[in-house]
Length: 145
Image 1: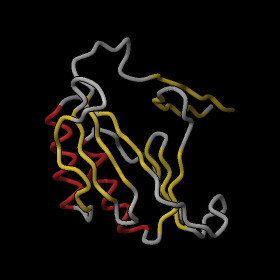
Image 2: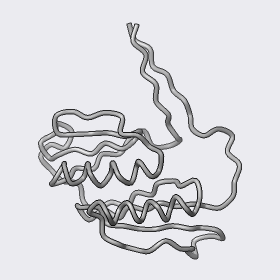
Image 3: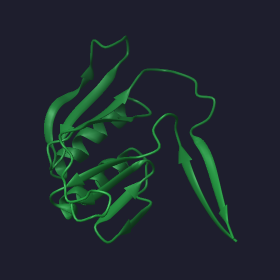
């Protein structure tokens, strides 16, 4: 029996971004996800994935030959320092500044940074301020014969 474990949040099962340059995307996302303590879970022919995020080429079966349009993804950060580190790692790995780290007027304590990934997607890291979580993530275990 094989066991596969994933840590999932709520609402979204997965998101696929279809990119022009997979190696550039992999460098960018590996760098920012490393700072956010999210490992790359796997790679395959024309794709890689981390938790709920799948990045692929247009040649992948699911992409059906089409690039995704400009998307906005926001990653959760554990603190303001993680947001700052995300921004630095993104810029050092092919991202472009789209909003330096700082507080935003969305709600009190909303601290975020925005970058454009190599395909122009608006990628954010956000810290919502001090809060207590019931668990760090939802832990799901799949078992197969």
